[in-house]
Length: 84
Image (cartoon, rainbow, N blue to C red; front, top):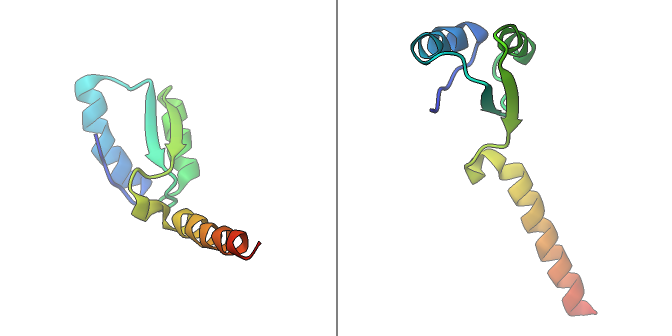
């Protein structure tokens, strides 16, 4: 399930009906976004007994800085290899 939110209040409003209907999850996976107060969100998850895991986004656009870093260094390594 993909739920987007930008504040702890929005997270509670969107997740509360899910938890009410299906029960509490053992684990919730989030991206590394800091668009809301992550400390409050962590505290809320802890109070509910839910383990919170964060991961990089699945889409390359969400990980564009790393993609660009790898691409730049790949070009540099190939250029150095050719000159040797």
